[in-house]
Image (cartoon, rainbow, N blue to C red; front, top):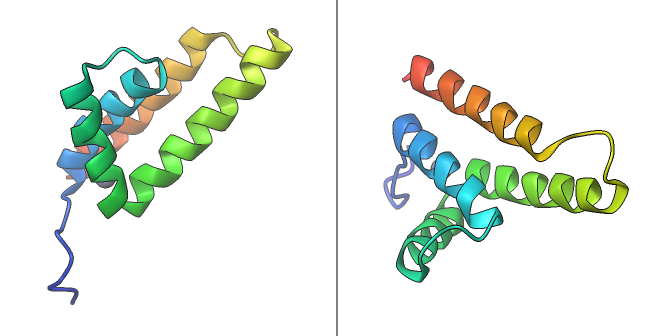
Length: 87
Ligand SMILES: [Zn+2]
């Protein structure tokens, strides 16, 4: 019961998670990036994912070994699939 919240549905989040990957990689247009950032402000689970992915990416960039960027993407894709099947 949180009428004041702008309920983001799980399928919306699945779309945004995809955008979050691109946002982290700086592959979005400024307009798209703004939309994603607006969603992040109203959606804690997505904000957490965004923060986590940024940290993981920073660690990967520094260590340059353990996780390939491709693996990072496929992990998010799995997360997106899970959200989609749940909705
Ligand atoms: Zn969300």
